Length: 260
Length: 217
Image 1 (spheres, each protein chain N blue to C red):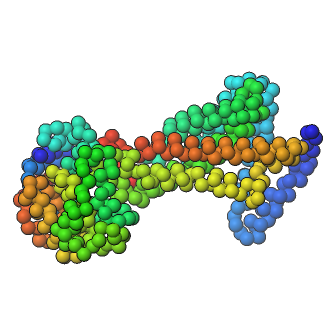
Image 2: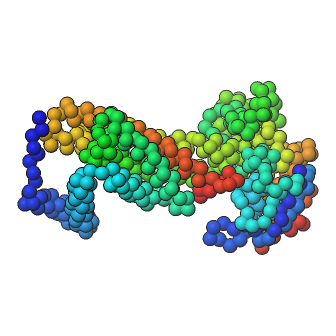
């Protein structure tokens, strides 16, 4: 069934640099000043992906649970770091709730997908666990960052409204309910939109990859359906848990609003 | 209800202290005007009194009970704040007036019936306004009266008013100040921050904030 994928040799890969040169030419022609970033970006793409390639090869060869879980920890840690960088509110720490919520819920989710749905044996089989968990964490990262940004900006912009409710006897949860719901919604919308567009507007990367690797398109669409649904659930789970935990940190011990 | 501040200091992050070891006692039934140059901490004092801000150091108490020992939702029901900018939600005036009864802490309060709401509107010279009207169609003066009404329906023992008339036309301002006075005559403590030249009728004392201290004058 599987025909071996045509390899890209070093020479062909070097040829791909032409694409960067095209982009660089566009930057120069219009004085965009993107040349430096383009250069660094290209170098990083090569370095990071080659490094990841070697790490994956190594972990696949070890075929042990610990390195797989270790890699998962690093993915969640990196995602947390990126979220922290993107969220403008620096006086309220989002690191601990984000890391803990993502680690616990996405670990459970990944185990369920690989162990129960795909039926990989053992459940941590690196070929399945790492790419699937990576997709979950990667998508959730974007969603959680959007949700948190929205939560902080809404609480700041509607400080008067939140304090009006507090002054009338609301708890922090009651005073911020509307903004918590809006924040979660903002995080979920992109993944719901992609449920609408998939297969018509775009072919997802994972499915494209499987097809390039010679898989039967009917097998790859089934995988893709699983991935899409898994991503919607993980985005919802991540946004809900992280936003609720961080919301608690937005209020002080007298239930006063700390976001300014 | 007696309010007491003991050695209270407060500063916003990275700014000079607003209150510095301030002491103050407010007896039940007083109607106080808080004066002071802008930035002297008038609004901050009100926010400290309903715990929307916490002091850096010092103690606040209600009838001798430290603020920390009172559930914040309970405290804010007894010490209510009227914000400078009236804040109403999108939706009907009725919905806005009934908002506090959606909160768990107010579950023991029966929501006022239609007739009570109507009478309350009449008392604030809003008789021409239907309860179904969208709150966003109100003028600032009308909105401030609705906000005050919403709070008074909860019968707080202490009413904090943060420049409630600063954006109001003279008629609305007069109604709001008259309502504050009536509330005081019924036994509530009223603490009012105001920039008005003329002290409002009925006040029983003045607190002047300057250099981080609160002086009774």
